[in-house]
Amino acid sequence: MRFLKAIKQAVASREKMLAVLIDPDKFDPNLSADFLRKLPKNTTHILIGGSTDANGRTETCVKTVKAETSLPVILFPGDHTHITAAADAILFLSLLSGRNPEYLIGQQIKSVGKLRNSNLEIIPTGYILIDGGKESAVQRVSGTSPISQQDPNLIIDTALTGKFSGKKLIYLEAGSGALQPVHPEIISAVKTAVQIPVIVGGGIRTLRQLEKAYAAGADMVVVGTAFEKGEFFSLKNKATIQDF
Image (tube, rainbow, N blue to C red; front, side, top):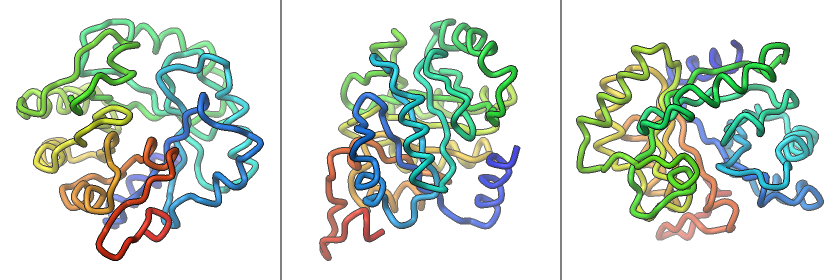
């Protein structure tokens, strides 16, 4: 479990991690070198995946990225068909915020055939979808509703359920392109409650939002849409995500 161990070591050392999420549906292998050169300087992980992979591009995306970077490449699959042994590890996600058994246990069982004989490091992860102000792809695909940010106790209880069920990471997700990221007070409350590594993603577009997430207790922040669109992380000094 070297990747999980490295994450835990970073948490123990109070080192903040930054993951860039690449959606295979939006990734052009022919432009990969230029794409990856634009990664923020302090990127620690690459996540690859999305709610859908209509054209079966995940494996090609993983292999292309791994050929261009030495950063850990970790799968963030929407379902079992997105799994490829070409990656380094996989976030073995359970959608704890929903009540659809297909995404609590069904997809996980379907994935075992691919995982059983692979060399992928499997990292059990409690995935909690939180309302980011717009309908997310995860919400549509899974047929589940996010938890309101006005109900922090439910979010905390759901995160603790993940910990008590043996999850090694908790992932708080506001959804791709969220209008509002996960509120810092929620991040702080969850981190205080679970005391295991907490990942936060969705709707983070500015350095201020990034810094607030870290200050609140996020151990890893995931940036996807903002990086895909080449958006600047605006500060008064006009710093960009590449400068961070």
